[in-house]
Length: 354
Image (tube, rainbow, N blue to C red):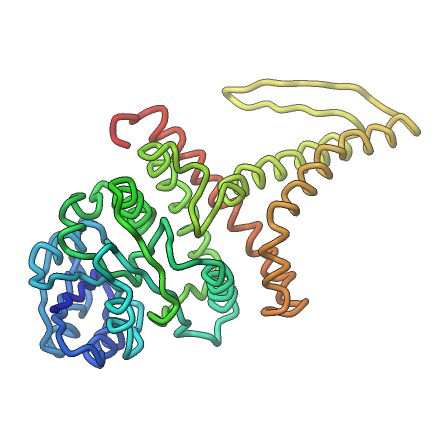
């Protein structure tokens, strides 16, 4: 059975070579490899052609469109996807195909880590590993970094939704549509691709902000899925908005406490002034009362995050666990900002585009 391996690539000169070498080293005997260049401006084409694999170039349209472009040209009965910054292990395709039985529409695998020297990359990897450790065989979500679809099932639902312009939630959307049509999705921890995880915090947070934005398009399209999936449940959905509420409560609390009970907001679109001068015991009582919402939100937020952090503690150690918590809070805030933009864009301004 021919398996077509499709790799979307955009300015991937630095990592594409390792990815292709891993694909070419597969133990599975019958594969074709197709690189879809999504309008790169670097040496992506040179790297692909140097390894004598299939190469298609398109105008920049995002990874969802690139994957669909490759799928249309694929000759395999099965189409497998990985990303240009991933390095498949030699048994990757074999492990996916082994789980792709007659009743299964798609099979996905897990991540390894290609850059373990980076603290941030290790945090991201350990979190993903912890989440995947709870996956059973049957799932309702598969990531596009490591997945194989029966081409007939993929074509039947129209492939990836190309209106998802960046790598964010388009794989959730496809998995949900397959599942809604009765397709069985499976997970196997035997299929591994090592990934170059992000290494710099602020670019990572910008990416998470974009993820929050596009996540609202996903939920506008699949409102019944706001309860979450096997990878991230409703608690994950609650984390970003709760983190924003917590930040807002902290700012209001300290603004009023520092100013002795005086709060003034003066913006072009909002004018609010509430002045009450407090002294002595009354001021102290106000500090306690105004701090109560902060404490309550912090407790609820910690409970939501508690199970994952408890599981990660042995993996990371105490010091790194504190660093992970800081990263996680910043990530939730970034996602929350993206969610707010997404609510405005996909639920208010452009509902018809969801």
